[in-house]
Length: 389
Ligand code: GLT
Ligand code: MN
Ligand code: MN
Figure 1 (tube, helix red, strand yellow):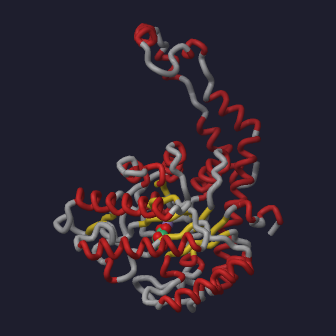
Figure 2 (cartoon, helix red, strand yellow; figure 1 turned 90 degrees about the vertical axis):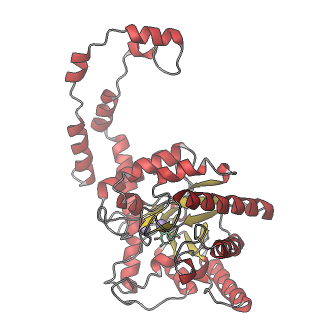
Figure 3 (spheres, rainbow, N blue to C red; figure 1 turned 120 degrees about the horizontal axis):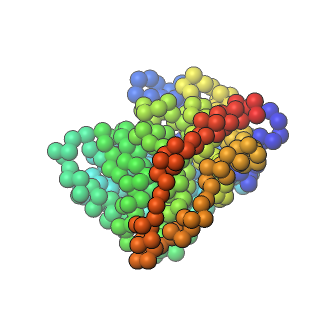
């Protein structure tokens, strides 16, 4: 491996404790790797060159830990962070694993479950902030239904809104420097999850009391599960000033949530995504929400994590090539050619402009015949990605 693809802190590569700590259990089989402690995982991440580590409350503190146990775990974890220089940019709440959340957390039909979810989240926010988190993720894995006989979908939305409004006020009241990032997923573990795509979440955020505090954490595999174009979701979030965080991984088409190594499957989509993030100078974490194949031991887990970062950096280099490639840039300039006659019609409406545009004699036949050379441009991109350019 050349040095060029060596991860550095400025790349802001982060992993969750649950990602490199994934033991490989799935609905059909038991764990294949022994469980490592949070401290061991921090050292593993430091060894492979990650910048940061993120966690759910219960990745760090077991659900039934006593306050004394909690304090000891936090002390040990802080020491591991100091020893390694790793930071905690993001934290989140586990609102999906415990049986109490079988019908959802903030959207559960039982008000006691909804309030317990709020209590758990406030405590988890305190923990995240104590360890340095500036972004707090909400992935509502259980916020949904198997049957619409069971829940009024507008009640689901109202309850989720009420919870987020409450938590924004909590953050403000505590004086925390923390932003909230919502993560969409269309299904799994629920039959249908509310607000299933990043686009749906963007519409929802506008209805909150503090929309300025709430943005998105789009995940590549989740958008692909819905058969959507992840780059377009990310671009819309970015354009709206809402790309607070990002979950990078990969997926074999519209299957279950595979959470594979970044770039392992959809190289071309991953390339356009990295090119976008680098071109717009996205400055947040590049978080890999993925895990190693079930076939791997911990050496394989390190191969997995190194691979995520290496592929990102290779694609970043390819993006620079794309931006500098004369033939590609020439084609792009030609495609986007402007006609001075159109300039007067650009921008906002005014009655005179509308009148002139209605009367303008377009040469529709010539426009329709124009070849766009997209085949050539795409093949140049493929050549570049395959390393023959
Ligand atoms: C869970 C899920 C992820 C979320 C994590 C944050 S937990 O692993 O599959 O997509 O980002 O809650
Ligand atoms: Mn996922
Ligand atoms: Mn995720």
